[in-house]
Image (cartoon, rainbow, N blue to C red; front, side, top):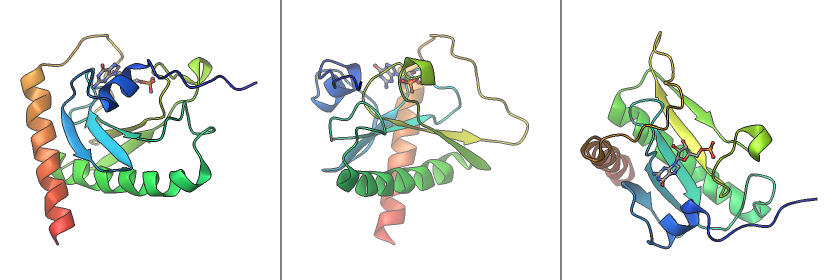
Length: 146
Ligand code: 5GP
């Protein structure tokens, strides 16, 4: 049996502006912002405005437009961080590693020989996240103005 979407989850609060975030991108479909406990420099999250708990309850007609935003933000993250590659992750339910129950896609910049940092529960410096968000937002406006 599927579990209902809880509108009190932390990402729903970020979407409503009740909790701040270091925003990278926003339109009518998606919001992208810096992960507060980054597992790599430039670790960015993309979430849909559609209230879905995970991939499986995301309405089919909203999925395509959302994934286009993921692709667009991923390209900007790679350009802004000069990453050699990207790891894209998406978890479903506790057993699948999900902690926040609003659909989200992790964009993790990668470099050869550099491992992802472990989950430490340690929050990153706000100024560092702010600087990454500005850099990625600038890369996004460059790719969209071309
Ligand atoms: P997941 O549910 O995919 O396991 O991970 C949730 C992610 O959200 C984690 O990487 C965690 O660091 C991030 N996160 C949790 N709470 C917040 C928050 O309040 N703000 C931001 N920006 N990220 C958060």
